[in-house]
Length: 448
Ligand code: ATP
Ligand code: MG
Image (cartoon, rainbow, N blue to C red; front, side, top):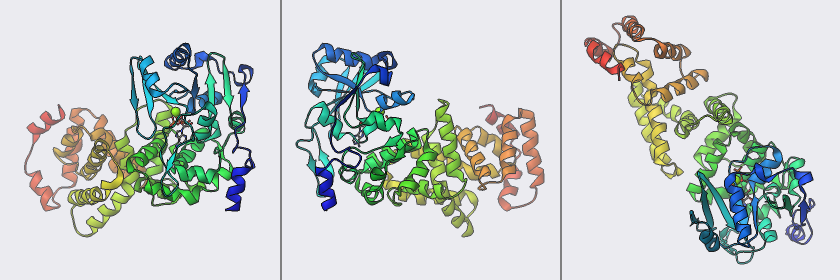
């Protein structure tokens, strides 16, 4: 208690509790206006011309200082959302808890926020911020941001950065430092725990001791966050381009298990050596860094596979055949999955990939030709490769499918016929199917 009180009165050991304005000139930061996107520069200039203050703020300034290409550009201004809305014809006000304006310039969208003040913030009984729409000065706005590296204001006209919390020095020292009293800031908004995980992973920063210390205590409060916001943040971890490093940071910072099933699955995967989850995340990281597309449904299929596979194995052990055993497992998980905030479009892909897995074992007659013509074949095949690499599927089976896929029509027919011969005579179901030579249907199938 006394420690907390002292913390508020005295500047923290690292001096981050009190603002200290510093203006960093171009010679030191080397960010020129042409490093901004066309839209970001245009929005700032236009607001200036209308007599308002406007700065590029947040992750973009941080990333430019680090030589990373910014993902998006945010602008902070003293104009109110209504004033911003009036200046830009293509703009709309969004958000409830914090009102922001989306300004569209060509294909870009710039998020414009009005400087926030600390005045009439409403907290709930757990100290969490519920409503926060009071406006303030740039200095107050800086105080409300999460980490020192995210509280930098770049003015492209004067080409200078305003830094209230030693953000530039922290970026140079590559450390992530919470502004203010870290425990209080996690309490106000527990999502900052996941932001600390993601940003330290993405930037390769060390989380400063005082910023890291309260994480374990406050991470549990994430459970009370609206599930949609939690799901969004987890998606940002998965698709940050640094998902594997995020697993390390979750462990290192002591984020509790049982916050969200997807997070729990990630934490468990992070503890083992290479497994299907870490392999999928490594591929995702590589693809994102190479600017290639990634599929949310596919990655989620991998993340949740170990749990699904447990159900599948249990159903197999109970005597069900592979396909019904898997269907039952998918349905069992579907019931649990309801509270996860998973949008339907992702869960549908995830399930389709799973449902096709047992079908790879059926390589006789018309079946492989039918399977390869399925719209989800490619994703399901890629998934089979992941399984084969991590001991969840037979590598010979995966190899057969690789060969089958690349073979011409004639070779494919030979390959499936060979399977037919090799498996001749076993199993009632197999025999029944074997009696029907589906040659005609086959060729129409794989022509699709
Ligand atoms: P990136 O865009 O690379 O993921 P970012 O830091 O820009 O990282 P955004 O979500 O775009 O993240 O947020 C923009 C800025 O808004 C941040 O830099 C930070 O200043 C502020 N911010 C975002 N979320 C919070 C939060 N939960 N608490 C306090 N400030 C926040
Ligand atoms: Mg950003």
